[in-house]
Image 1 (cartoon, protein in one colour):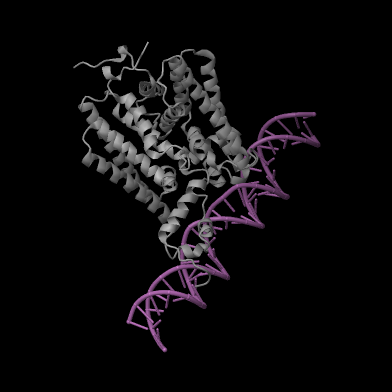
Image 2: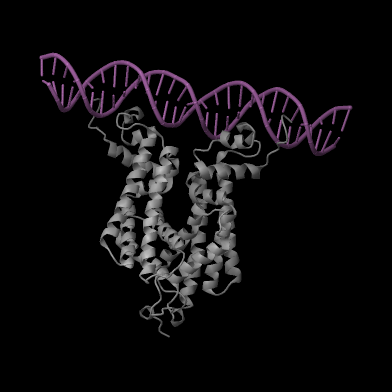
Length: 203
Length: 203
DNA sequence: TTTTTTGCCTAACAACCGTTAGACAAAAAT
DNA sequence: ATTTTTGTCTAACGGTTGTTAGGCAAAAAA
């Protein structure tokens, strides 16, 4: 082989690309940029992938699958609505913090997906969103949550957990489960019916 | 002049650009794209603006100013922490819904700012964030809010109000002040100390 | 009326883009 | 030992990018 120990595989390309897409955006990251990080030539990438779009598709759809699998797991196992919501938030935070590059691309760069894939992608995102919504609905039925606008509560919750991607620092003090707990406490405070046991007011 | 009634000005260029930047992203919107919407040639744009970056700068910094001015107004006039927070959220929602194109660029495309401007921009964003934080601090001092992690509450609130940009439809039923009220109710539910008057539990 | 300014135009530039074709050596399979 | 496959390379393509130079007619100023 031409030089020293190379031999790149698809996963490496996708991982490097995700890092660049996150930092500079999909459109501003060139195939030559990606190749250069891997110390190969741009043309060599095409031995592993079909084209640039395919990289974005892999990232967006693999992350979508991860999120959907996690919420399916929650719905299978946990029964109490509050417990479900807490677990769903925890899984979500874990997925995001586990791979901030790919999750950043999933959250921000999906707009650059080719039209044909955009439709499918948004469908998956909506399915995830509606799984969250039905957890809230459960909570209302169980008389645990306030009957606020469901769709609205879901959007607030999801935006909060997604925003983590912007500030999470793996080297920082806050660990994923601690983040998830604080978010859960905060949003459940806004959802939960106010009971006598909630009173901690000491005049 | 060459053709029919043209005579473009800087504001029109910025407005059109904002629309394109929102839809396709900064990097994927070319000067020729912008010009074409205005029915002029790309080269003609340079009679009004210095370069492509300048358009992004104008959008990002004018929006930043708008947000900072609004929170300054809140801090000048309103006294009660809850009242302040409600008003700050209302202004924020109004600014976003008033110009979704520019606010989308402000929220998403700032990463493409030239390095020299990026620093200043993030400074402004941080200042806005800390103004919000001090409102929460006020609320804690006034014994109105729970002493949760302040920074955390602010990030949750801001992410919720910013997310509006993704789904707000000017033609839809929900008006800005209604949106602001629901968000406020939700986040204040998570912040407010639980008092006897909050109990609406009827067994 | 003459001069100056304004606002657009055409043409072109060098740089960069994603992608393909074809060569070639190392590794693997036969 | 020979053939096939794999993973890279160089070179080049047609197209797009931001931007500049210079021209020219309409409008404004003198």
